[in-house]
Image (cartoon, rainbow, N blue to C red):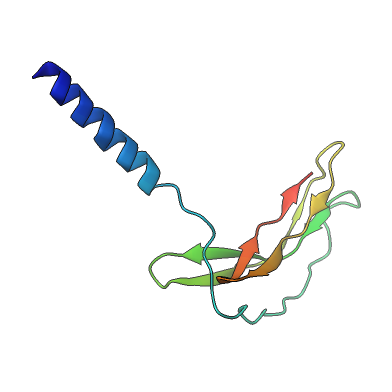
Amino acid sequence: MKSTLMSFCVIVLLLTLLSSCEGPAYVSAEPVVIEEPRPPPPTITHVWIGHDWRWNNQSRSYHQVPGHWSPPHRGRNYQQGNWQTGPKGHHWNRGRWK
């Protein structure tokens, strides 16, 4: 009985963990970019982080997140995000510091 209960708990835990792992969200067409004014940088060393896209599970669509200035990350460069197209459609690769 104890072994069966332990096995059941392990299975429930694994299913919970696996269900929270989501892959990229695909859309049939890239959303339209809303152009935004770029404010002046706070300092000459700040780096512009261009707009980004976030997936919204409720609306099942990407929403644009405005760009912003960021302090530099020592020894790293910011790589802007980009759209990738594949057999399932388009998905957004978020920008990151490399």
